[in-house]
Length: 185
Image (cartoon, rainbow, N blue to C red; front, side):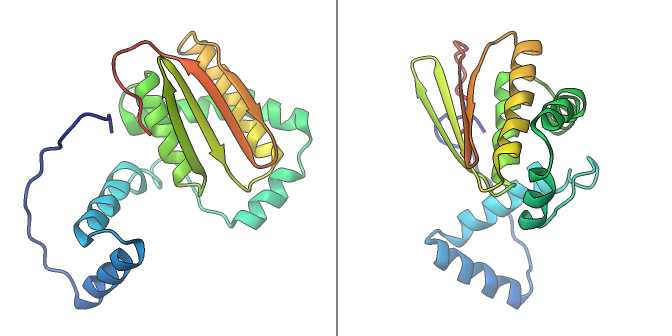
């Protein structure tokens, strides 16, 4: 969602099971947000991400299992997988889910993917320089995998060079975008 001012809203009424309403109210209290905000967030996540998961062949896997499997790969295997398979899959899934591919739509999708992978995301803008930091607990190979994919996609698709740094717990990158639309946080 682009940063733009006030959003247009509408009112709709639903009948929900009492236990769902109780859970919603408890969760909104725990998160210190209104139930309305919580429901909006949940529906947005469902419509932007969850509804596509089965169509795109995305699966959930326990983090500890994933880290062990991915961590056993050699660095060159990770780069090869990212270059040959990963970049095409990331491109295809983001295009399918967003309906277009430009820097704004891609970064909107990428941030959503990271958030749905339990990755903490930070985005800052200084003039036309966008800096993204992704903090995770998925290991160096996972960082290397996305470093490789992002470098290829930004160079081949957007004709932009990005500077990516990564380690065991995070990866971050920066690029310049002088388009007058703000990128998603």
